[in-house]
Length: 73
Image (tube, rainbow, N blue to C red; front, top):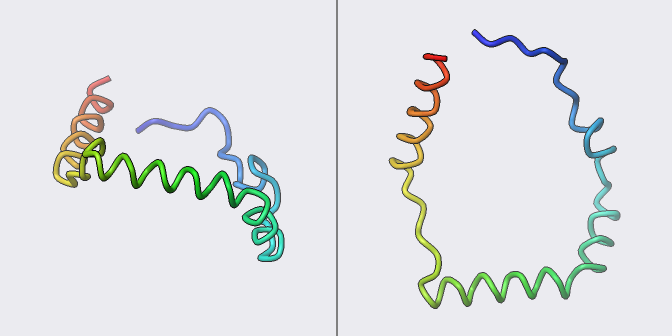
């Protein structure tokens, strides 16, 4: 089994303290136009067929292949 060489940091160490609901609402308000633009772009991609649906079985098979590969190394 692989052992970690360094301790795993808590999320707070990487991302800072969790934001309050008011801070999240303020962030959304500041970024509303950009968020809406990304949503429109995603919907256009879906309408044009530029997005493939997720295939859970294929994702699981890939995870198994990666796991097996990591066990052989």
